Image (cartoon, rainbow, N blue to C red; front, side):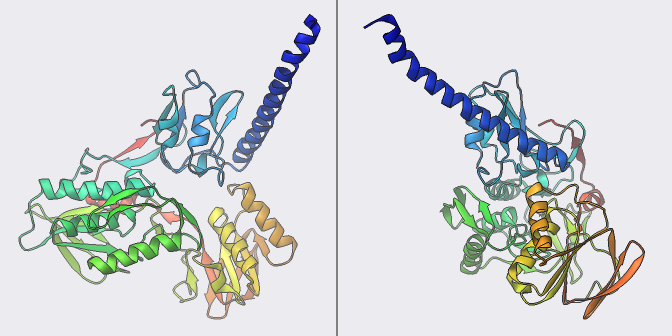
Length: 437
């Protein structure tokens, strides 16, 4: 066999393999650049919560972090660009932290905020106690939005409260504010420890999970819960998770009050607290805040907003089949709601936004709205504002022209009022983090 033959036998397959690898790498690079460009174009470059900060000098470009991200492939959060890991879908990151664990060179640090946009986080002790002795925080409000982490923190916080705080004499041992994942785990823990407790929730069991659209997949991981034991969920739907929680609540008789919003938490001279709601007041030795960072839905402040047909989030698009619906807002939630209702068979759907473009919505949501608009199932009204809501109509002002539009339902997606003022009223110290742990 000649040398040339040897080269052809051994080198040619290697060249083919290398060429295939290079082409695949280039395709991935192009796709990742396209995702990053879309994020920049839409202004979606600021992560909402805990997220990875990547030290490019230590990154090997092995892609372990990309593979480990539980949000993939539904969301493109991380990707390789020029042989280095990059955060290409910042607003899709919800702080799983799997990327940091998977990185073989410790090139990833989990941080809050960025150099240009700070995130306000309450100052907490290792036992989740705030600067106000006796008031604790667990879950999303403390910066941990992942369900598994919230469940764990709710349990740990109540264990710390039980160990360190005196039991209430003429008061409850503990009031838990919020019935989301952290509050749910906290209630089970309090029950298991024989504490006198009360859960107060302004909406329904599940908190932020209850507010998800129908059929949304929620990422959960195995967790250990008092009275329940080890729960094993992978990719499960909102409905499945809530059904599980409701069954646990019923079987163990958890003490929860729904549709009861806490208006104030006041410190007392004996070291305890009084919590005031529109219905009554509660006295407690300790308080655990297990509320979300999204806060209370922001209202429009227009006449008729208190009518029963007005809601502030979309739960099930199917319930609007055959109805005349208007959705107010210009963010992802509004676009998803409008497109979902239109696709579900609403008689007519109007999307009203005061801006002249959906600049801060994800490209896929803008495309979905464009498709619905093109086929006539959705009417987009930019530069418009809702002025009045009537039982069977709404008054809409579009660039100075007032229009009366027949209407059966109004969905307002105008964001939420963050709980910063609520924390300040209690006296809880906070810290604004700009890209640090």
